[in-house]
Image (cartoon, rainbow, N blue to C red; front, side):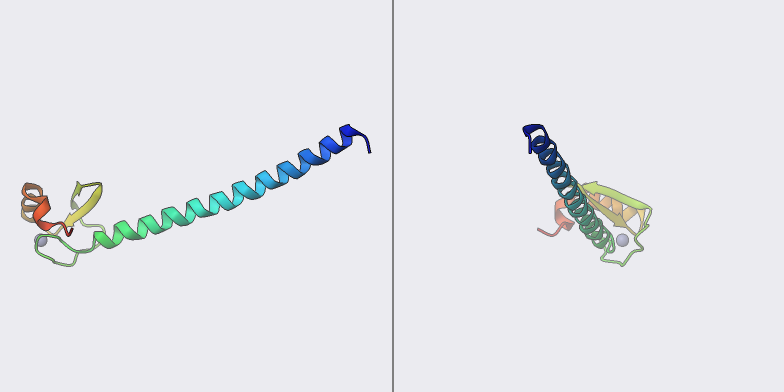
Length: 90
Ligand SMILES: [Zn+2]
């Protein structure tokens, strides 16, 4: 076996390993975003001001500390915006 052949065999092995690494990486990224999505949906179910249960697609929303909060009405949203720390669980 000459050194040129050895090199090309090594290259094929490296390409194979890279494909495996990229594939497993893509899978873990997908899993991570799935978990994240479930988390944010959970946080949107209850109005933090009046504790009323809401549909996930509530139209009154605001973002505080990078978390989206949903409200049953504009007045609940205004109360939250005025004093968000009062309604957010620590
Ligand atoms: Zn409300």
